Image (tube, rainbow, N blue to C red; front, side, top):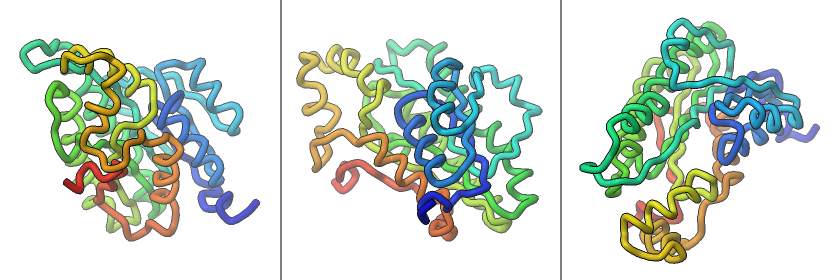
Length: 252
């Protein structure tokens, strides 16, 4: 094995929402770095399809059933909080039930997973918590109230975790991509077209990438590469940070 394949040798990683998109790319990257990876996803069959080729295991789990996570314990060394979904609508039209579900999946579940993983990490004096946030964890856009609120909350969880874990060799960081080429983003196009009153063919350039200096979607493997680095030894002094990967969006 070359050096990149041994960086996480002997470590156990858990990736939520790991059956597709960014999560699947992260699972593959961490496995390539030597980690034993658990792929957690609501779609158990899809989780198996990602886990088996990388020698990992699948965990079919509904993370919105947070009561089932209250007493959970995790012996993982790397936790990647990635699971989430998006809904695009103005505040006055936003379904309260969907708002609550997004907060449950993208705020409450990460808190409970961090809570479950920290004792093991602290006991061994090493751990990596990586939260897939977003540019929308740092700024806002209209018509995304639930997602923006959840990602801002995740940033807060990240910082508190960094402060509590740092003295014990446990780091916590956020990765903040712009629009990534995933099913989640592709699923927004119709909603964005409706919200902005334009044709779907114009959404990517005129809405999604309007503020980006680089007019390209971020690739899942690019995000996974940063996640892999944050999980490794070279990032030992990176803690409580938020790493943008947005083509220059926030440079404005």
